[in-house]
Image (cartoon, rainbow, N blue to C red):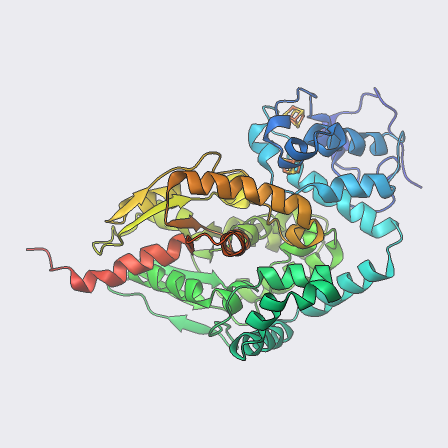
Length: 456
Ligand code: SF4
Ligand code: SF4
């Protein structure tokens, strides 16, 4: 029987934090009530919230969503279709966390709220099928992802993609499939470890790190994973690419698929803690947050809670790690006017903002021009651009306007979701603007050094 906490009842915060189920929440792992109570309703987050800015509805603002979560916890409301909709329209971008003077950890609250809806509300047959297929049958299985990637690569190489895009055929058959197709990047060679692989540092070794390769990155952006590997080696680190690693589970957490995400976290912990290394490096911001929060995801797991905390404590974004260790300033030139797009899960989720910029500024030839609101979401947000295409497009258009105003010829980011979204936006708007990862440019600069005369 769920326990109800009446509004206004005084309960010490440390007591409240122990409650797994509260009020009308139907499942364990409810949004943390102590965290909910930190919200003072000041409203300072509202103008930073992309969904509130577009929809102008209090229930689709951070404060409004927290209010709904609190009402359920206090037995005055329930997890119903409306509740689910307002939680799902949220991008989970965490811009509200940065804006909040009370440090409300909104990201984990909304993820827990979504899980409550998934655990208790009926779903349409279509939603059930999509969840089963994508979240449970595809992403947790690397070989199935590789197979899907191979089929997409064949589809592109046979010229079917350009035919489909020219004719608009898919849009007539299924707008959702057409939306997914319009976002698909170019698939080239894959970068997936079938067994443990170990790469030696270049020059004097400074340590050993493990590299988290991700699920989409090794298929769609394998060159970025290779660039990340090379910059780590160039900076004196041996790199271990552990076999057995799988998708981090971030999209599952965002979609409220907590049990699947927890199982995936356990498999990654086993894969990475087999060997002792100095750090676990990740080059995808969305994965970085999920990996850094395995400790919270498995907090109630009697076997894995401690190992999850150990694992999370070792996770570093590649730019965070390189700046912290003191990276080698590259001497090769990359002549580009670029602008940097802060991935939400790097800027708001991990508070990593200055490090990617420090790397870009250290590259000779790079002219870094800041865009307006660089840390405002681009509308990608996991599969948000597929399930909420219209809202995502409106948010993306504002981003593209800000990019265009800088006159940059390249957008640099640090997350495959943002790169994919901005690439698709530029392609659809016929903008001649390239998109790249910070590691791509640093690697390019190191590789250009062979054309630079050695220091006297
Ligand atoms: S996470 Fe982003 S979209 Fe969701 S409430 Fe916060 S600012 Fe708004
Ligand atoms: S800024 Fe923080 S305390 Fe203020 S309304 Fe938003 S979430 Fe609540």
